[in-house]
Length: 181
Length: 185
Image (cartoon, rainbow over all chains, first blue to last red):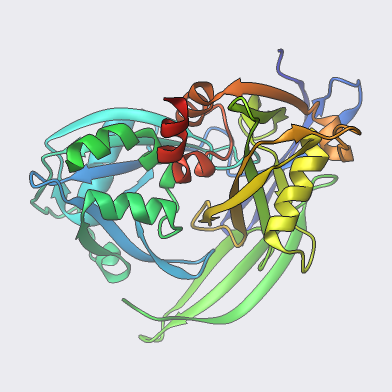
């Protein structure tokens, strides 16, 4: 099955912090279709399932402005140009929570929504220890509270709408279950 | 945890045929600071999807070209609910319209907010003993244009798709994971 043909007409609207990209495709029936998508094309994020040596999960408790609820999210953020996903995960974990990862392993990726241009990558970090340096930002501390929760609690949160990066938990599900036992 | 109080809301719609609702929310925290965030999706908007199994444990999926990743994805049937529509009735209607299947029984799996900046809520259901209706699928204009096509796949394939970015919304697979593994035995 071939991808649709992308036509050159593309509109980029910036509304406050949000970018909407309207893409034009030639569809299988020969008609032209315009689709509004969000995030700049090629935007890359990383989220980290980070475990301490005692197999506690390090989560970033924060207020989420979409659902307007406090949620226990996976630490993460933008992958910078030229940076590997694994390195970005380590950096974001340290900046957001003050924890330094022992080992980092790639898990997988997802798009979150059919109309999103961004890709979210997930990594598993083990043997994470609290060792903050100057990159652990004071600003992050104001809005984000680092919490340690059990693996079972992480799985329950992912299933019960208490985190938005739940797909990372799905990708790592079998391994997390094994680690919890 | 700081308390965020909403002080202002600005709504805009972007896009030509397939539109996106963008909602700028302004909040104030107790320390007097103002915060502006740009969220997407209608506030109070609801949608749903059904993980639908046939009596011989095949999964009813809809293959669609998706404009974000620009690839064909194997999604589970679903869509937006109508105003005031009961979530289970909405999920049942979407299953029938997109695939032409009717469920034997339906179980509620849970809800998802999908993204930290998304205002909508998705409802997920597990449907078993799904059988095709006589009239088949009744696709809407958008689904037709996207070349939506019903495909039956195995549970093992569904789980693999959900973990390898071949599904745009794999939350139902996470919610039903243990049940699905049982059914595979």
